[in-house]
Image (cartoon, rainbow, N blue to C red; front, side, top):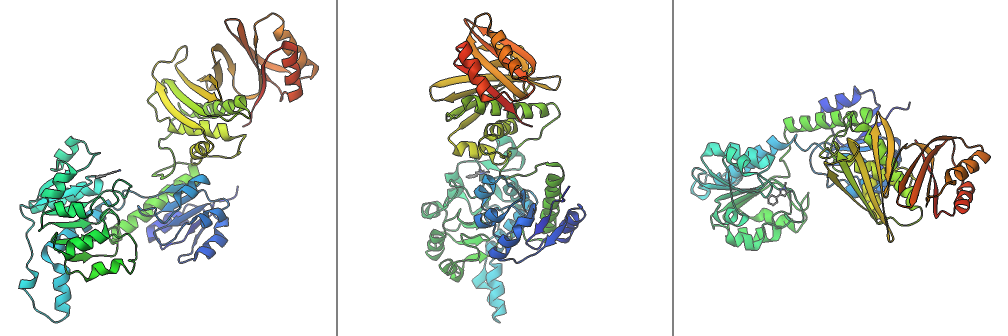
Length: 527
Ligand code: 9EZ
C-alpha cells in the first residue's frame, strides 16, 4: 500500500508537526509557496495542512489529483475555496474550539485597553510626552456590557468580565435561557443590547445575516459614550459607518482586531488616524497556547482521517459517526440509491425522499443519505464520496430529502425510498437481517430477496407460466438463478431474482416481449 503524503504549507507549531511526523506518513514542510509552486506540487499529496497563509484557490484544487483532506490549524476557512474542495470530494477540517480562550481573553484586553486609553497613552509617552488629563478613562465597574453572540467565546468573555462587576446583557437567537442564566447574562433583543450598552462586544460568525449588523442606524441607537469591540470577524461592523461614528462622536470609542481586508486596504487605513480606535492585526488567536493547541488538534484529526477515515470538525461533510448497528445500513442505502438510478434509467430523477423507519429513526442518518446519493451517482459519475455526493446530486437537479418514522411494519428497521421521475412516483423498501441486505418492497409489492450482485425484476400482469418463461430464457443463456421472490398486488405481480452473472439486455428484451411486460430490468450491484 502506498503511504499517504502530507504537505504542511504554513509554519506549524512543533508538537503538531511531531504528531504528523510520528504518524508514519511522509511529511514535507514547505512554507511560503506561491500559488504556482503549490499547484505544481500538490498533485503528490493526500493531505494539506495550512494555517491562514496558504490560499487554497480553485486552481490549487484543480491541480490536486489525490488530495483527500485540507486541514486548517485554526478556525477561519476564508482562505480555502470550500465549494471547489467539496465538489472534488476533499474534506475540509478546522479546529473550531482551540482558539476560544485566546479570543475571549483578547476581547477582554481590548475592552480594558479601550476603557483606559492604554494604546494612546503608550504612544504619547513614546513621543516623550507626559499627558495625564488627556487620557482619563472610564471604569468598567457597574457598567452594562452587551454581548452580541453569546456562544463559546461570548460566554467566556461574560465569565471573565463579571469579575469587573459589569452588568451583562446579551443577544443570541441560538442560546437557551438556562445557559445564559448560568453564566449571568440576561438575554434580550438586539435593539436593547445596542441601545443600553456602555460596552459592546461581538462574538458572532460572519454570515449574510450578520454582515453589516452594526451600521450607521445602529451606531445612532447607541449611547454617545458607548464603546464597541470586534474580535470576531471583519465585516460584522460596517467600517465606513464606524469611521463616521467615531469621527463625529456618535459613539466614544472602538477596539478592532478584525477587518474586511487583512492586511488593510488603503481605504481602510483612514480608520487608523482616529484617536479613539484601538487596533490589533487579527491577534485574537495569536497566543503560544492557542497556536500549539490548533497545531496538535489538526495533526491528530488529520491523521485519524488518513488512517481510519474518522471525521472530526468537518466543514463540508455530514456529521455523525457510524456504530456497528448502523454500518450495514450504509451499504443498503448505497445499493438502494443505485437501484433507484437503475430503475429510473435515462429519465431525470426529480425527487428522492428517504425515510428511516423503526430503530433507525432518530439516529444520525445524514451519512446514510449521503451514501444513498453515492449509490445513485455510481453509474452516472462513478466516484462520489460522502463529501460531494449530496451537492453533486443537487447540481443534477435531484432533490434529496430525509425523514424518519418510528413505526416500521414487519421489520425492526427499514429504509424507504420514494422517488419521482416525470409523472412516475415509485418506492422501494429495504432492510438488513442478520447482516444481509434485503429488498422487501417495490411500489405496492412486498417480497424478500437479498440485494446484491446481478438481479432481474419483472413487473407483469399476474398469470400462470410467467416464472417458467423467465426461467427458460435464463436457462437457455446458461444463467443460473440463485434466489427468487414474487410479490402480488391486485392483478399485478413483481418477480425479483438473483442471477449468477449479468443478464444481458437482449435476454431482458426477449423476456419482456414473451411475457408482454412493460418492465423487465437487469440490475447490477458492483462492490
Ligand atoms: C448571534 C448570531 C447572529 C449567530 C448566528 C449563528 C452561532 N450563530 N450566532 C447573534 N449561526 C446574530 C446575532
